[in-house]
Length: 162
Length: 162
Image 1 (cartoon, rainbow over the protein chains, first blue to last red):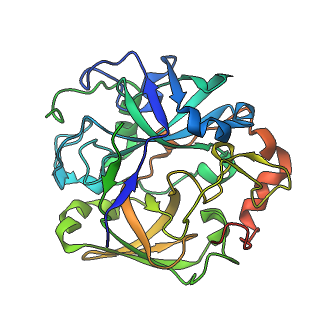
Image 2 (cartoon, one colour; image 1 turned 90 degrees about the vertical axis):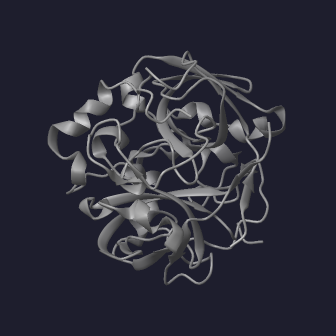
């Protein structure tokens, strides 16, 4: 299999200048505002995006320089396979977040509920559609019960810093 | 901004040999079975994934060879910006699907509710966690009302084939 190459379509700007002491998920960044600047050459692709209250951002975790296949994620002290966690140091460091879209001004998107570090390269935007994106699941593995609520409060520490 | 390069962590196998006449979203592929073969060098990252009933697959839409910034998506006859749609021909052709995880056998995952073409290169797996991934939104733009239900029934046609 050949390597796959992507070109960022824009940049995400947030108040988070460093990868520690920031929300670990979008629901933990509730109310925190950010902006996205789309490159002029991709701006036409934004047509009608203002109709959606929530959008899915797919981005490159550019501060994640190396990875481990097993990790202790922020919400646990036990080791798990990286694909069973949302930890940022992944073989392909791709992040996804659902954020609120507040306003579109030309090729700038004003967003809220951000959980990514300032300057994050954006790869794709998709509209969030509850009918296809929202699931109620039966089992959430090691993240059972109240642990998942921790995503709303927990802040990152230095464990995944280079 | 420099190009970003990823190496697939494995391959997704499904009954869909071509990109037309297949489900356009995972909820349209309900009950359809597939498998994922993770490369041996990444297999350790699967530890504990079997505890999750649903996983998020992030994959490369390898049959999408070119893109348009404006598209007529499967569920509409009007033109929209590609970032306001889930159409496959995107500047960075990245797909995301939530599928059910039925069984883990070594480095092979047995999944259900698949909506990707056979042989799709897999970039990442994340556990689906309703507390952070499920949102009820206010506005779904051009996809208002009953149109979103179409995702469960609609099949792809040839509009995005090369």
